[in-house]
Image (cartoon, rainbow, N blue to C red; front, top):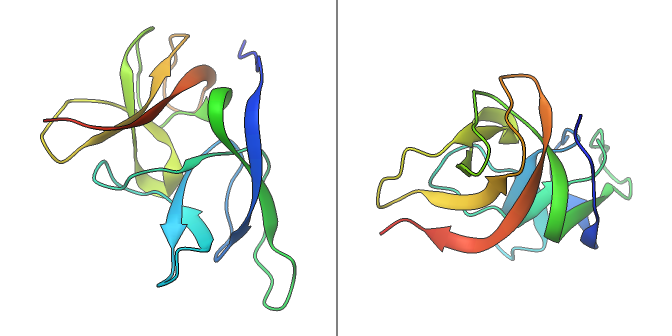
Length: 128
């Protein structure tokens, strides 16, 4: 069972519908909105703490965990201690490091696709 030991949450505005416990990145030309990080080459800002259905003209605010530990939904099998990258729709995927990947978190639990595990957020680290 995933536990959330807390961290720093920052309210941000989404530019599209976002799911709970998924990676997000800056979007838009001014970088003041967020959307799902969808690839290992995306540099996630953090992990959403709730789901938001985007509504034009609505507040579209979502809390994003930018430091500390968080729950994260997985899209593949991840071992305890493994580096995690963003995958389709912002889910966490196991890192198979290439020079263009951003390792955004480390697994504090083992999990498989569809599980929600606890992770510790990394400062944005590009594999080199």
